[in-house]
Amino acid sequence: MIKTRITEFFGIERPIVQGGLMWIARSELASAVGNAGGIGFMTALTFPDPEDFRAEIKKCRELTDKPFGVNLTFLPTMRPPDYPAYIQVCVDEGVQFIETAGRNPEPYMEQIKSAGIKVVHKCTSVRHAVKAEKVGCDAVSIDGFEAAGHPGEDDVTTMILVPLTRDAISLPIIASGGLGDGRGLVGALGLGADGINMGTRFVATREAPVHPNVKQALVDHNERDTRLIMRTLRNTERVMHNPVVDEVLAIESRGNTQIADIAPFVSGLVGKEMLEQGQMDKGILAAGQTMGFVRDIPTCRELLDRIMTDAEQIIREKFTQVVSS
Ligand code: NAD
Image (cartoon, rainbow, N blue to C red; front, side):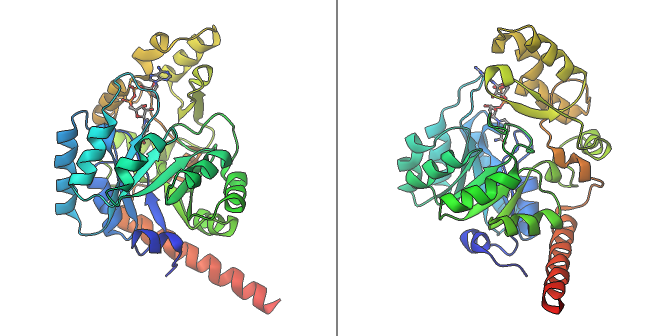
């Protein structure tokens, strides 16, 4: 048993968080992670209508009596969402935790905090973690450059970000990016984190609601099979390499890229179809360098059991070595 400030913070048994994953982080996955002793976050924007999102929260409650949270991402989007409406649903439905991401959550803090909801802000730099603490966030998830999706524009890895964030703030910290096994958990704790966030690793689980081809693709690809798109828009996204990604990069290389030039390729709606139908060359799939050690498709319970067993064994063995030397 590894108890940390993060297990205390969420009221969970294991310091493992399944963060927001557009289209994927729904009730099936979040409840499975919760039932396995971690905590899952459902991604609000997956539900274009806030009332559908409300129904999903209710569904998650039927699937688990364990805690879960909601991810709310404030990145640029082609279909600007009504964020206060999503927050109001969280308030009405008694959601305990919101993971904000993509931009400073300050404009929404009063609406969230006055309802007693705790905010975990996911960010990609030390300065943004400091700001999150200043504006009243309750915990920080710090996302290194290895991560899938939007790892920021600073290109600083988890190995550097976590200890520097630990030095800079006093809030509980979740390390994110490049984490997917027990070794990563122990490493992250050593660097000063209180828990880990995993994304890509959770997509390759039995409960993730995506086509089997998507899960198998994560197993088949390795740590060198990601590419960074949308750098030219300063909205970098780390994705699995495929022909669509090459096409996007070719367009970007011509210079003066506008979102409209690449929208048909990067649109979330196209990505959603790919996740559902399993045609892996249809759109883009956010994926992290952790693909290097995604080698199977376990249940969330099997995955979390394995991570904890491995982490506890590493701690026992290293500790013994230190004591006996
Ligand atoms: P979308 O179809 O609106 O956009 C697709 C991609 O283009 C996204 O990466 C988006 O950030 C980017 N984009 C859109 N308009 C842009 C602009 N004007 N300038 C620069 N980049 C632009 O996105 P979607 O798939 O429907 O997702 C909705 C939102 O959720 C997006 O902002 C997306 O980045 C974000 N997201 C969230 C998660 C999560 O885990 N919560 C994961 C991935 C993406």
